[in-house]
Length: 393
Image (cartoon, rainbow, N blue to C red; front, side, top):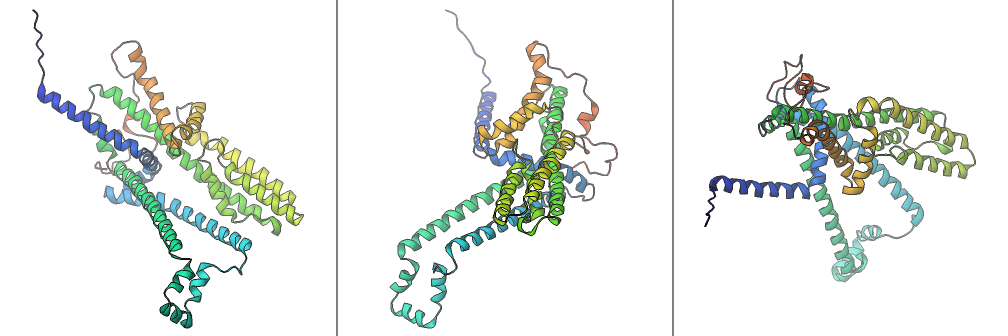
């Protein structure tokens, strides 16, 4: 009878099992917060070039990362708050026009209760207060709705905090993380080549699109403000500069992009022109200028130079389209991430795997490993002329 003996390294096996458990826990957390993490990665790449410029002037990496995030994120938050404020103001105006100013509301009932005589009535008959407010059921429903809104706002703020915290620590410690990851494989040259290519593509896709949106928003704001100077009063563009900035922001959305802003605006101006009986020429001019000057020209002249890199334009387009369809809102960022990883894996690693040859790097451009398009990359190293940047970033 043949006996089989297995030489099992039980301590090592236990550590491997623990590693799988910890990895499964990390995967579970990443799955539950995948949208938050993906958006945090987008904020990191959108802010990294600004951080490196700030880092040359501010010695403390934590302070430099905080200043960079504030400089990049705060304007976007202020623009969003301003847009929401205008939208709520217009919605309130629209509601007043529909309901009329004379309809008694619960707010008016509460103000009426400020009258001393009514206060005495409420004190003598507490049920009068409930009657004025619509009863206990109305109060309960209102409180439940308020708590629901608070929950939504609290959850949104939590996700926002995680996004900014992730971007902050990536900005501050990206080189340390890359140095640690470089020791995980013996084929460090291949690994570094792969990471450098992925990092460059992420920088091109995310920062390039942000830069393109900023340029487009600036062009749109100027063009629409100038158009308003010749617009008839009855069909003037409302908040022209804001419309241009929003058009630039909408350029981040695949395919439809700025059309989400200027097409509804053109329809709104057409309604105004139809109501007033004049200004049709301006509606046509607005639509033509929006399509040619704000949409097509920046997309043809700016985007090819600031985004994409080595990625195929058609593949990137499909990544932007299919990403949101598969994963939801965060798919607009996760789709390009998956495309970048697949593209560079197929270009760098797959040929050796298919031919069953040892995985080895081909000739690697030293600049790709020691610097990116704007200084030092996440893999490590600094370009010439960055000697003043401390290495502990």
